[in-house]
Image (cartoon, rainbow, N blue to C red; front, side):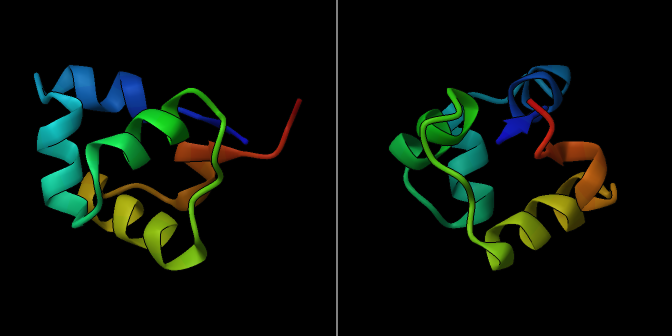
Length: 64
């Protein structure tokens, strides 16, 4: 799944570890999502949307 997590994280000068802490997941999970090796669960996608104050569709896309 395509996503903008890396860009959104960089805009805030957050490391993967910083974002992982905010979302209560491991840094490895953030890395895997950013590299599109892992799709977030729906609850995690909602957490991301709330954290960045954006609709889920603006962060994650199923478009190839």
